[in-house]
Image 1 (spheres, one colour):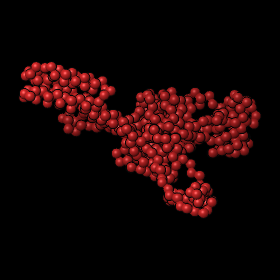
Image 2 (image 1 turned 90 degrees about the vertical axis):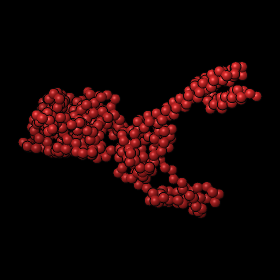
Image 3 (image 1 turned 45 degrees about the vertical axis):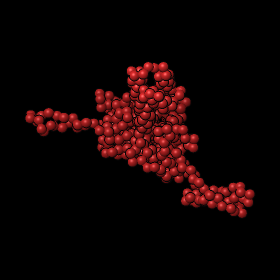
Image 4 (image 1 turned 135 degrees about the horizontal axis):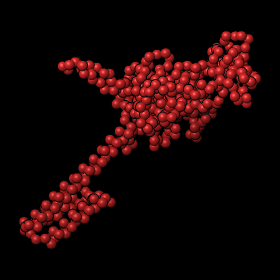
Length: 435
């Protein structure tokens, strides 16, 4: 066998070493496999010399194409992982696992694992151990894992041992379970015997501390200027009283529905003013008392049945309705682009931190709904540039994200929101936007 034949055989062997690395079922791989086999067949009938060099150049091209395909597959894989990371960014200091305790909130737990706590339900997908992501209980242990490059949260399953016992019935305290109970009575034939477990019924942990917003769900509301101007009001109090309480009679002007028998009395508060154009967005009404209709006329006679404060002349009277409040919130960013402003901080404060309640100048008419999560932004100050020659130029510092809030009650043009996170004090007229 000549030297040229030896080189040709070596080239053919090298070609067949490359071909098995190309997977079947892929269009690009099949095309390269076919091309390689054709090159090998051509070799069996090729001339010596220049044809060998021709085949060598084709095989080099094949190797380069193979590397590009492998690089492309690796790039797609890495890109897929990065996409998942962008979809659900984790808190850089997240724990590996966490034990739920009493007074925990879903939002607080989510903050430990996630950069955006409202993405909490996304971590539970494809987890058949947790049917409802908003229902976990004190004592549950949650831990972070991943599936196909996507982060997930799971519940830790405890493995318990059993011990032989002749007792057919047992009563155990809940504390024994919480402390890691490991003994269970079993029958002689190895079957687990029933036990009675005594425990206090613990509800599932809440998304947010509802005591922070309870008063804003039942004791206040925002109404438009038209509704206030047309609302009935207290013109006098029976027996020449200056104030009225439970059991006292009131005279109300403007009632128009004789079939209604129950009413609520409110006191008109401050107005909500738009910082953009000065329009009145609504009026704050504070709950004062409940009353029932005694005699329909103008003025009508009402009797106070329940009171949160003393009723005064001029208080507004509105029909009592069964308002439905959302208590199971599902945090999510709004689909539309929101640019709002904090127009009130409740509690008589000029600034507020985490778990403070604020009002923003956007409502139902603007597409806002309960559960919407928004980012709080502090507008950058304008300062003088001291290093300019004329010393008159003003520079605006960049805006900074300083917190997150969640809307929990909406009205026509105003919404109440709870500050869920604050890196510094939140001030009046701070901006709010879609995350």
